Image 1 (cartoon, one colour):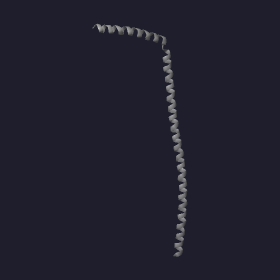
Image 2: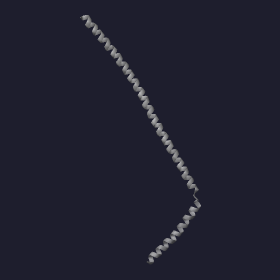
Image 3: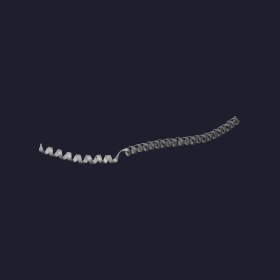
Length: 107
């Protein structure tokens, strides 16, 4: 009977030791899996930053293209004719404004 209990105690101690080894093994495997997950998350975050950078580059290129188009449109205008028209407007506006003032004072 004592031998049986001593043997059971020894078996129980061996099982405890086996389970402790399994727990250590599982802990190591869990840490390895966590490292893999961290690597994957880092890669995902970096790819998100890359996508944002690419979108920003596309936006900047579109803006440059728009600026180029607007500059070409501005360059296509005849600035001398515009200045001449502006001077003509200023001259006529002052005369017409004076005439309006005179008419209002007569009324």
